[in-house]
Image 1 (cartoon, rainbow, N blue to C red):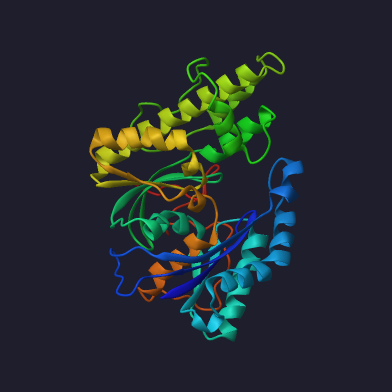
Image 2 (image 1 turned 135 degrees about the vertical axis):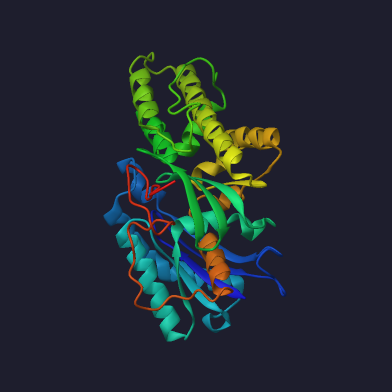
Length: 357
């Protein structure tokens, strides 16, 4: 089975082709990436210090056809060789999502292929199964610039939300810290690089909800504390910047470990998966590895290249849904907000929150 995946929810224009080995089953052999093309819009957005939705949508419109063709060329395939066409249907910046969905619909209609509208969060949630033999169910920490959630994953479309952020996402906090310190955009990798040479114990920062019951997160207080600390730093002191980045990163690691410990205690899952852009942070992965070992569970994360937005994760989610017969009609409407759990409302900096226990 071969599926083309298109991702245009933010500032990466991406297309990939993934296939399953012969005889693959739901919890069996992992997939194979035949092509994974990503056009990054960093140059377009860097001078603004963040993603500008209108610029992102225009760049997707200009680049997507070429990116799709490049993926087909690298895979040595034509559209007739595909079994399905998947695209991110939300959540995300609606202008970009529209570009990807309409392109996928047109290709599916013209070549009589199944169309699969993929929840961007589900793409991250299932991406680990593309490269690792991970069986359902598992516990998932999904952390990115726009989302911070703990969920149980029992299958495509089958998620239970255990906790979410009440305000900002962890990745947004990384970006804001980088901007306050003049480290550039994107902020996550910049903070991680600076932290590598810093003292993680020099500054004491608040750990929101630390050692409190439950699995929810809060990062606005940490972000405010960083802003106040930046104002006290000696101007142009690289050691102070490195120490603050290291202290900030350690604090986020403390929060992740604490919240995940609560989730592991309440879920009895054998596997902890971390996914999303923040999952590429090596220090945070190490903290979660230590936590998993202490609880006797396995920690699994996608390769760093599949943590940030990419078409391969969308193609793989398409494979997972296609082999279950979960196909979408061409009247699907793109969604700027699309919770993984159908019965949840939107709160704070996240795309979904719990609606019940």
